[in-house]
Length: 127
Figure 1 (tube, rainbow, N blue to C red):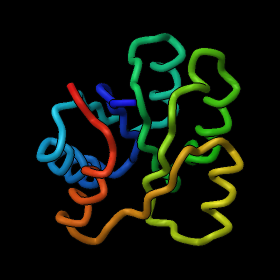
Figure 2: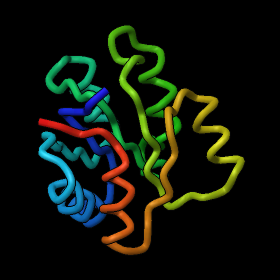
Figure 3: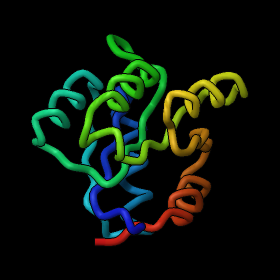
Figure 4: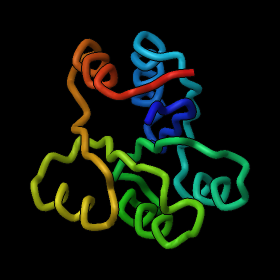
């Protein structure tokens, strides 16, 4: 499946900016960033946004990525959206827990821009 609408949920605006810049170099897909997972969940439930895939950070205040993942996987019409964890966490037990909660994939945030471009180019994005 080619992803046309990408949503990133991450409380770090710098990480989102870097992600968007790398994505623009490898894709023409539409990109949206939301820094608050509670707001993202509300917008998804009210159908204000309808992404094809969600890139989700784990370490966020108010609602963690795992809490968001648990909530979205309970919702008809939302639980089918593929969720890719995009986090600095690299521990095997965290990766396994995320996948047990319904994550489709897990990407550790790379340390440099070229690695990020390479990672994103492996996914099927299109406009």
